[in-house]
Image (cartoon, rainbow, N blue to C red; front, side):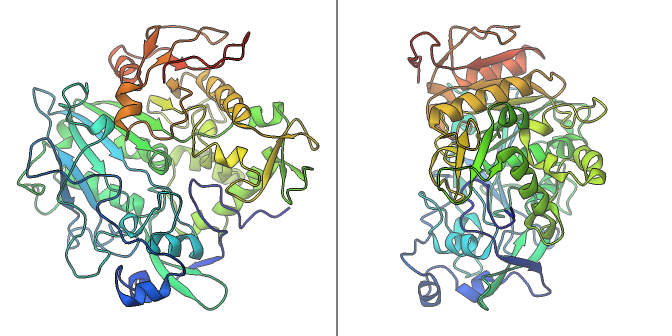
Length: 504
């Protein structure tokens, strides 16, 4: 059964229609209208919502050393490093202190994505998702007046917080602001999205290109290596880093795992690691062993095994005319080298594959990786547990005539996938899986520093115990500072009583 037009991405929106590259410049602002104008209001069907500020980052009274400070990518130096609407990309920095100036956290912000006419129109109109996402995820100047609309100084949440209780507070922080809507993978300009009814607009998909430009600036390789952020704040040369933690949340996690080995490859002298937060997929083996089927027409009977159907979907995305092909998506280079000759680029869209050994027993992702996934994630679980779910179909567990998947099923499938993936120590070397019902960890102070999760003992091999109760922050800190080895904390239901552990 063809599934080409379905979207499995987080908060992806409507089904994909036609997309193609075109010669004209990214023009969604011209076609739909700058945000707030009468043209925009008339073009957006239903209630509109203009951005109220910088997405997911509250403004910070600045200049203040505790803020993250805006850096606009110079359109002269980096003309291709653009947001969806062609405006310059942006990142934020906070210099380190107390001797930690050369210890870096580089974070890729999350925020869903849009990959077709309907979802991108909804995003520009401020209608995408329950939050909802709006044009500040697609632009640095959404009202089109030539002045950057993103705040000059913002508060760093979670791992980027300047709060003294945060063990990473004194490190140098870089927050790559997400305005490309492509999970940080795109390298293509002027991608045309068409609704099939004669309406279209062009968007840039240049998330990877933004990271390339940002890395050059942090390495002082641009025309003005003495650049400073808003307020006159300067950071050290990234080439002098002693430690780099490359992180990403949700859509940013997709970008982080796709870009980590490439981004970090030019820093062989530093201690490098990757942290993947709020994004993971059920592994092929677990899907097969649990006999998960997809019910396309929602009649209670499965029409296809989900293991096989998912492979077809991802391969279609990478094939000519598919979304990932049209945006010239960047993915881990060793994954592409291994699987593209086999026409199995679906392998490069699944975390549970990319974090295991490839053909020939060599690691796909070479950077030591720590994964955090909530076993009752309130965003990812929707792909499995709503009937029909956000992609428009139902999943059944236990065969063609199985039962609809529940949140408990999602927790079981995800936990088994994490453990299976963890068994390959050449890729995934640490994991933290609470069961608190929260999607975001790194970008949320509560889930990063406050919520605790009990250590559980079962058949999972145990190396270093983190403690009886631990936070995501403490688990990650111990993993980074105690060296390689087994470090994990998985919250689960008690097998005897079925009761959940407390701690969240």
